[in-house]
Length: 299
Image (cartoon, rainbow, N blue to C red; front, side, top):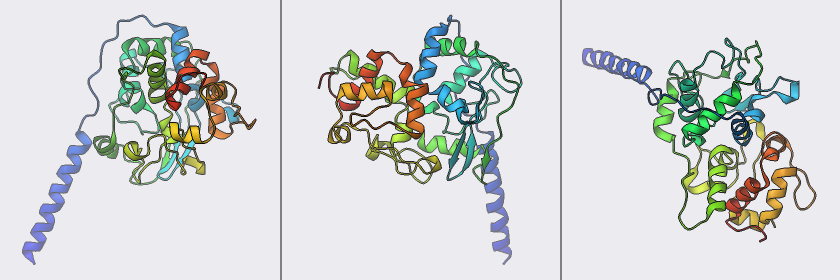
């Protein structure tokens, strides 16, 4: 019995040490210096492509642009998008561009805490220094809103941020934005947008019980368990062709929200078009469609 008691104490001590080590384990790379001049127009365009306005503007309740407050119900609790305005207390007004860059590309807060992966930072990891500078310049023009977004309401143990360090170690993957030789400039631009800024796979790929995307076997293959109970259809090339989509029709739908049969996108996809892809250039929408269908325009 004494041996069992000693073993129990030893196991508890080891678990405590392990927990302390995980909690102290730093995430992300050190801050980088940014010396590039940002372009507001380019940054605003990238912010649209990246869904910043759609995710951080509570349109349904008349919220101010980028003031946060959009709720996302997940199996782990309810997440709420934060305030991204220039308010120094409740938004990004007190941040540096270096802290902003680390948050966007690494998913790490100014305090060094990991963000929940509902923030689609895994898709932004390959943003260039210039793109970060452009985004920062654009965000610095957003009027401040001196109101904090509501706090997350996550169930235990998912409210423990240190657990996200383990999640990152197990599931965090680099984005698939690197150019593919032989595919052409348009196709690769579409790949950069679809797999990067536009983060299409965030909704259109199924997830495992830990909330990680099933990238190998189900990439862009649809998701029947979106937060809030919605569904996202498969948008891989085979599924799109089977549904009668062409490159031109898909590019038009990304502009207008209208499918070839006259039906309109609803729910979150409607917001994606209204606040995001509808603002892109015709060339970029064609590139996205060409990549998704793995075809050229006119086919």
